Image (cartoon, rainbow, N blue to C red):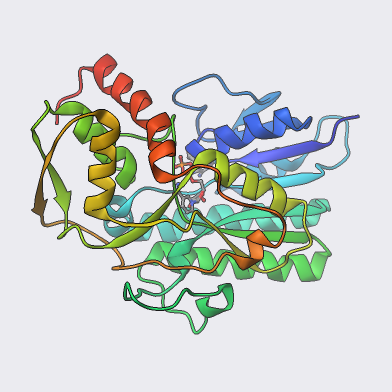
Length: 323
Ligand code: NAD
């Protein structure tokens, strides 16, 4: 009998890719989400459309037809978006993601799920200066996340750990850094910086101008989806407890990100800096914990963008999208 996994948030960017990964690894997979994936058929064996803020729906998601328990649950459902969304939807994030995590963690623990994965974020860390030494996972405390999204993630991490202790459920907590790839949200206000910039660059002629929020100097690292999925899988099947950073340690400024995409697109671009929510000024993390279980990033920023940009360019062309 194949092992059984439940992926919550299986209609979203990372969740839909995670379903494919788990299928390749031989799992029987159920997906649960408010919606099916936007850009391709789900690879899940079964897909339930459920609002996971409601406890009965979480119980339904975690109950197998014919009894028994899931071997693994991956909790990726969240009210989620890029910096623009995070800064304008504080209450929705605190309420909706908070409720999903409270109800889902409780339902899994009560059902006796043996392994529970929670998708936390690098947003649990405080703001940093670009020249500061890398932060370890323990340095999330004393806590001072830059935004409410980060506070909710920290709360949900602690919630999962508390339930893990009480109900003898193995909990794995990954703190994802910015992740990008094909089939991620690319317009509409919830897209993240790499997708937004791919879209803007795909929409202009060679030599055109794109708008970039802030002064372009904020430092970031970006992780290609396949690297993240490998990290999730290794972490879930490891003995590593507490928060674990997953991300490629290749740091670039926001302007460098734009120029890398332009290089991939074969266009020269001008950047106009405009007012907008930028978030923290720098991110710089240690990755010893995830490396200790054999993870390493295989996709440079340029290589990952070379796989992502054509997909977004095709979406822009198909939709006749204009900025
Ligand atoms: P996403 O928005 O594409 O996926 C989230 C999914 O959750 C969506 O499909 C959405 O419909 C679903 N959802 C929202 N509310 C729901 C509800 N009430 N009931 C059921 N489903 C609901 O986001 P993503 O980029 O795939 O992120 C997945 C997880 O990883 C999230 O927890 C996110 O916070 C975390 N994360 C992502 C990144 C990143 O760079 N993408 C970075 C750090 C952390």
